[in-house]
Length: 536
Image (cartoon, rainbow, N blue to C red; front, side, top):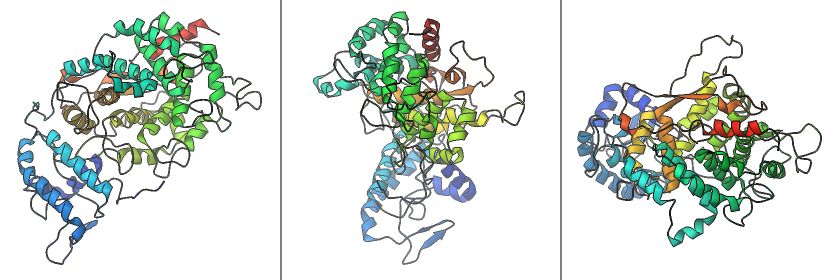
């Protein structure tokens, strides 16, 4: 698939805009804070004086054409209210209240939609929304009570149109339970209901379907297992048929190293990630069943060729695609990184199989300014769910870079890379743009979209990641088990506190494991339980 590339990929990134503002010094500052209706200062304005071109370092502002008139009209409307917004946002950094300093000259449908999204988000980020109460730093409080009510409603009887989402019921359980935990809620009341609901979804051949009588598929199986880990308890864990699960994973394992999502289904990075999540949480044997389509000789395992297959999914941009030779996507990037972090230690395995500098470049380009949120693909719009899918990549990348240099002694102190993305920008986007401020509650993609349990879960996961710092402890004592896939149980978190913290402590949410995205400690409990049981 081909798609238009509009100039440099970093054109709207937070880091790129900050560097641009710093390099232009007083000129950039004056441009960002002055009356933006001036054609010389309006970054959306393509016009120039007379027939001449106005040239600045690194780019050219072209003469206005007939095709640009519609965009100029929209830009003029936006510019007319920018001075009022700027006055109301004196405590918000200019990078989050100003129009992009550099903009591509090619007018496409993608660039028009991007302009509309900026116009949609700016009033919320620049404190121009009169109905919203902002703190001194220009962000609203997390409306915890309303969001909790919204999530509870999603586990009750749903309207008739939800019949179309019957196969997604396991996902709804996970999204709601994970979101409620992040918000500090007690979820024990749902344990018995969850167990009785998902029990008929398990097939005797292994795995779970999306509903009663539906074929097994890795996506709902992942959601069910994580949901059972969240509610915890012996009854929840004993529900899972581990031997059948192991046999079923063998049927999904492919000769090229990857995993199909279902028998005869698509093979992609989701399958790679989910398969190793299941293996490690259930403490399954890694030996390959003889009836697996990937079995050809003794010694092959469920992991044979898997990291190499993941490596082939990295694209020329640096991101990760669903399968080799496809387009890079933020969710696949998380799945690939998390998969590798289960197989081995991040500072060793990630550089071995991925081009880390190129991946960092692509991930950095996913955070936009002035919005502050993440997009999932090149030339796509910010979306609240990528607060996790892209934002969740950063703890894994940071752990990769924080790792001990193999040439150094294990006792050599490690230098932390700190934060590689704008936590402030992401938190501003989440609290300003992703909260449904109506009675409905919940969190959403962006202001023009309705809230739903999917976005509520992953927006909160992204907020949690931005509010905490995760560390991979390579020297930690590995948990007592069969010794396989123990790497993901060596993570510890700490509260991320900055002098310029823009949210109050009452707006902090709980931690979710950076690899499994479930409550911290839940994965360890499930793994320990199945390790203590030994064989099947």
